Length: 498
Image (cartoon, rainbow, N blue to C red; front, top):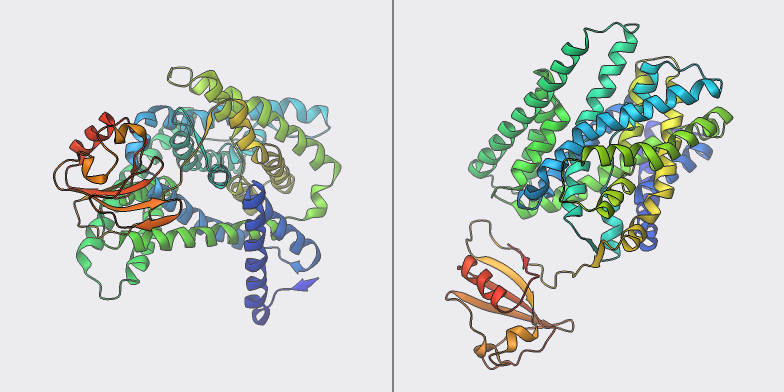
């Protein structure tokens, strides 16, 4: 087996990244979660070629990667999209996580003695806590690859849940490790609940304040080298996590809130920052998944106790724990149909985060920590194989999917421009008053800049004849008037580009 040394590190890293990118392309083409293949690449190399056994380094790299992933997820989330579902989304991300952990822990504590395992309820709750958060990033890559949208505001709902439920799972994991490390002695339920509330409040407050500080700094520092804006924002990300943790808040929540604040305000070089963090986030995900795959001992996954317990835990999570937690959490909210609740239950994918959190007991050297890590790893693989490969099909079966129209125009405008850019498709309603561009009644200070017709782009004139199916790029200073005009024309789907 190949032992990684300094002179070989760069070569091995480049080879792993190259193979992972090819695996991601395969996953994208066949509608499978890229995470599954990234883990697979790491497992194959770890089994046959590379000797790697450093839980501490993997935990540190995972912490850094998770900060980047959460910040980027918050930055890409538009507050106007999640506003209608912020209530149920936050309930799922907090109460839903706790319910999932309790239901799964009860199952593990009941089934373990029947299988000959001595697992106490605190240990069962620790195992369940590591698995209580979801990873929906792979869900959206699958849906987008198939140009598939979701009805009933399910996309922003799942984005909000997956982006904000990791902090609660992290707190539960750390809390249970502390209790088990002190031989079951804790400061009491009331004190633990107070600690959780304080961490959430401090984390949310610090995330908002540091996010605002990042906006203020980026907009006023006036750097000559625009590439340094990305470096500056990286510094704010890591400061948000570490300083919040220092003042006893939840650092992961602070990072997500900071990203949400930054992403929903005008900042200098926003386009450049978005592109940078899109690529950097993918790099961090690949590195984290590869390291987790390298770390696991594949031979241990095939041991009978791991196969039996991991299989039962994985199937129970899919068919009962997650659905029950979702239906209980969303019971007060009537805006979601039963089919929507079933779909939310089904796409509760486990990903790299549960595996990362399962490393914490290993680093803390708790009893049965290795078994717990392998069980979580195997359960995650089952979740990705069963749920991850049926995300698109389940949406079709439940009648919740629709074909999502792609943008025909990719426009980069300066952040200070007040004009709005929209893309609309010409329908019969737009052509009621005539078929040429000059016959279309648009508000003042509104201009059709370009037309896309069957993949061909051209600048129109007043005499240009419009055809049904043409895509129009429209710029306007009268946003509200233009929206009203679109409604009168019977145009429901409007893409806002700026």
